Image 1 (cartoon, rainbow, N blue to C red):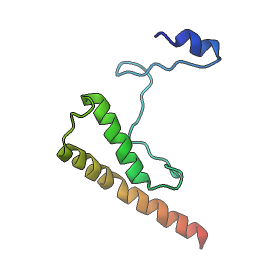
Image 2: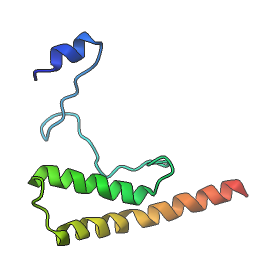
Image 3: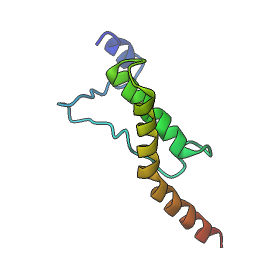
Image 4: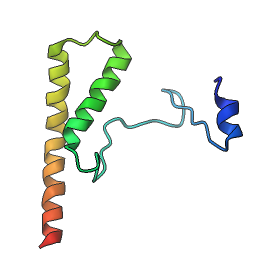
Length: 93
C-alpha cells in the first residue's frame, strides 16, 4: 500500500480489510442515531446502492436493480426504525 508510510508517519493506523483478513465491515450496520436526524433508511439505501455500484462498476446497475436495493433496504430496516421510535417515545413519557 502506497499510503502506509504516510498514514503511520502521521500516527494513524492502517487496517487491512478483505475477505481473508481478521477485519471486516458490516455494511448493513445501523446504530441508533444513524444519519444524524435525516431519514436513516434512505441514507442506508443510498450507501448500499453506492457500495453495489462500486462492486459492479459505475452505471452498470439497471433502474430495476436500484429499485430492488431500495425496497430490500426498507424491508430490512422498517421494523428496526419502528422499534427505535417506540422506545424513544416510551422514554419521553
